[in-house]
Image 1 (cartoon, one colour):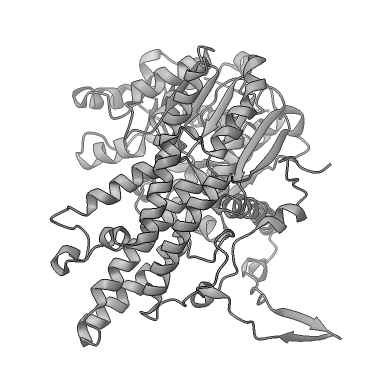
Image 2 (spheres, one colour; image 1 turned 30 degrees about the vertical axis):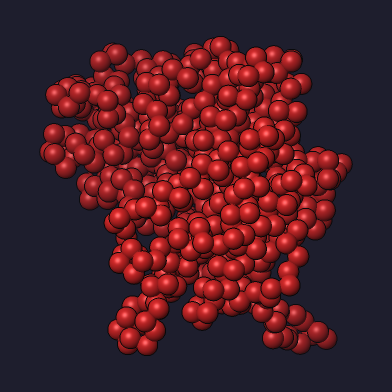
Length: 599
């Protein structure tokens, strides 16, 4: 068992697996290895990291500012939380534990850095101070990167990690989910991680400290006015899709489609994927002058993207959010100058004009306007209000997530109109750090029953006794799904609801996130197996090589292997991808139409 020098042992719950993992990380650090720690939310990543930090503080001379431990987190609320925890748990003078974020006066930063032994900061603040040469890493002994999966090539984490590698400073990355195999490889490169510590929610040593979570997908159907408006919008998107298909970049769709069912349009992620191909095609047309209408196809691509975003807002968010986005499109009609690589007004053509000249789009706009003016609520909003009513009557706390600030405000306003105490919290673009902190403190202290939040508090924020988490918008990644679910079930069994519009993008996101998380568990177990074997001196190079994936049409008949030529389907032909998950997969997974999981 570790001997704690600075941490107050009386304030820490004794969890043997945390102490065992901390010892393993310290030993790996002494062997020159940087570590990644993967725990499901609620299992205590922060305490394990603090146990390791205590050892690094003890390794160095107890002089002012010597042997610094730097704790980095991506958001201000998370930094506030880590600072508060460190201040409460470490037996150090108060002036040696400090918060260094954007709102701290520039004049005070050098002095704070000089005298501190534990510093909690955002990576952007550290990069800014290093670039201005107000601080250096001379006395830094250990760096903790919380939510390390956020490190991509443009994020400040990468730059700080590079400084640590150049100065041989040991680092520890924390995450509930490092992502797909390729993302894990990228994380290892960015942070120099060469030793992993991983525990799943099924871990025998940890299960008795973690409360189970009950996940319930609720499938929401469409009322007839909604279906009628959606038909108009789908006809408009079909027109734009087939016009864009004339470029040869994608395949066209038949005109005799059933507009009451989901159509095989390109999703936003797929449109993002083909953008480089569109750009190369345009450059070729300009160079060869083989198609003088190239600019029209660029405008059609922009119109397609806007219409798919509008469809998602209409189907999965709220009618008022969709109507506000239409207003944004209308404003683009009168823009004199365009931004981006192509100047559409120069050719008297822009995406907004293509959309606005479509009659089906205007029929949709009028139908949507009529629903909003009549006070008709979105079916998902109706389901949400119905769902949380019993929990509120019992005095339980509810946290609801949406991906859009407008939706968060609508949810809070709807609840307040019913006499329910509700607050909204959003990112730095909409709220200052002190405003975010004030809202979270009110929720912690029970001054409101419901907190409507954007993704700003997905990661790491600990609010005691959240009884119910509602995903009004689907998590966009497997990591986000884990993090949102982790807000519940910390002091009792947690309930996690997913409001899924029938046969929509919601279902695709829900199952894609689940699939990603299952693959994560398999990949981490594979890496841990290789790591243990290599630590015993075994040659595992063949296991580190990734197995080739079998084609989707691979089959074995009578002991022989066959692959058959697959027939391409609709617009996915150019991407070679299957169509998104539909209702049959919900049935296969045991999800009932009423929304619960079959026993």
